[in-house]
Length: 178
Image (tube, rainbow, N blue to C red; front, side, top):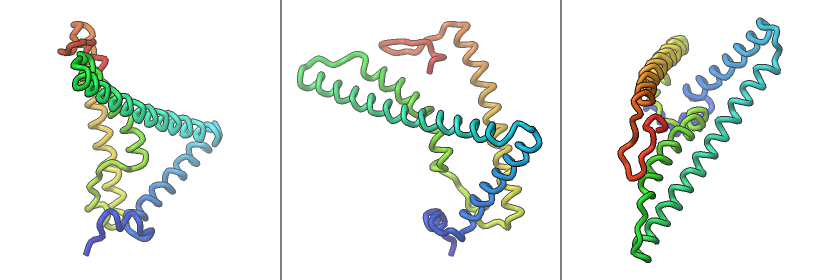
């Protein structure tokens, strides 16, 4: 029987854990090679990685604060509507904008923690050399998809800025903000 993801995450000898350990070792080796090759020194790459992790953690904290603001907004809307018969006109628009922000603020930390959904059946059960090639292929395909999405969304954003397109809402804002 194949171990499920929960078992393989707890089992340090599982193919998944071995793969993660190998990836961490490869990353450390790459950083070490970059340090010696660039002559910049170890501290530059460590500082860059630490700054990236700090920005990622701060954005996750901001996402939590945004979710709290969403909850408070809905609570206010419910109280105003049902206790005072005075519904707000801004709560739904605010929540939709904040939800978009919460998603984009939280996803980098979830990705860093590997808390996102991953279908790793092939990689977990492949021989080590094949699993390494699969990881490389998957990362290259992911990078290509991200670059394509960046190019398409960048062009569309410029188009929205140039045309002055706004959202359809009680409180419209420029669409490129979202």
